[in-house]
Image (cartoon, rainbow over all chains, first blue to last red; front, side):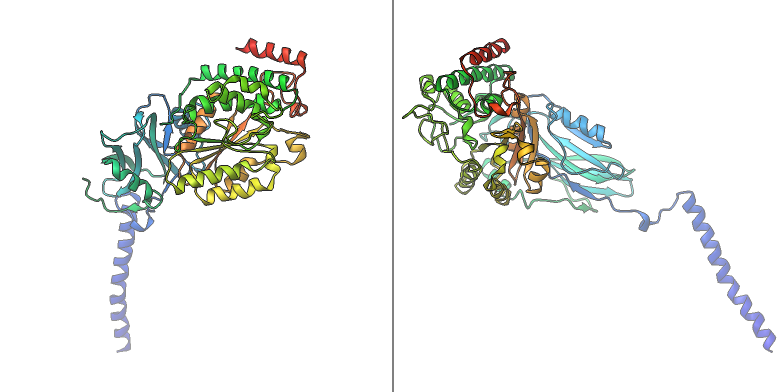
Length: 203
Length: 278
């Protein structure tokens, strides 16, 4: 009687073990083929605005608008030299290009003051394997009395290095003259450096 | 409305040398004064008054004019020459430099003539004055900018560092501090007397936005001042590396010329050298 019970126990315990081993091998096979990804292994991108950089550069040079992903020191130097030929403009923050890239956006040369550009949100589209940089360009209304002083508006943000494709999307905003001061007042609190996982409606 | 006249770099270099020639004449006439710093900062003064500053010499007290405060007042010959060239007062005043009852003394006296925005004497006070003006602009919501020049030897003064702490604390982004970094002072080279380096790191640690430029290059001066205009929430310090006595080789980089004037023969030689540059 004792012998029979032992045999039955062995038959029951081997089956889940075999299933488990099969699952491990199966998952390993697909993991190695890169057909499935473990979400917990994917790090969220981090983003940081380079605060020690002027957001308006006064220049008489005619410069095209920029949407650029800067991946090394040389490209950064080239970008800085493009917008300021005297070479005195520097990025105050230390950028480690082994771990980060710099997103540089600028307007073309504006003849008058009042134009702004700013990265507003960064979205990660995991399904399409891409990062979307959403930025806002602010122009004064046509009848605003702006000062004639040619300039470009610039924004630089540091993004953790990614293999995903990086796309840009612009939102244009026109501000009424009387609202301009209000915008300025909020400048120090209007920071949105966080990563947004869900895309919002764009007007 | 006060405005800037935006002369181009070529014109600014010509103006700079013209100012230097005037300074040599003024100092030779006065037989006393400070030569090296006056000559070394000519490009800064021409860039400021003929490109950057929004001013109106015909209405010198307009509320929204940009302000310039000269803290190292002993280099006032170049300031006086510049103000006269820009049309604030007639050139005849310049030949009365340091004379008894003259409006143009060895250190500037506020309001003695149009365009003279501050009084100086003991070094180290101008930055505090400039901060006061900048703070008033913020409080009164008037959108002028304040430019203050100090020497580098002047940074030995404790008051400078009190004000250097104060300005970023008040987020005075309407203030540009130009340091004439010529490496000399009255008694010797600055690094021998009271080492200042690393000056950039010191100022950045106080939360100034700092730019280092060649202070004899008008393009760099203009670019730095323009960048300063676009910096928000903190003041900007421009370390302007200048050559004291620029343009006159026997004066250049010699601290002995800090407070010495050329004699007649030296003045002629200096003018010859400067004229050849023009």
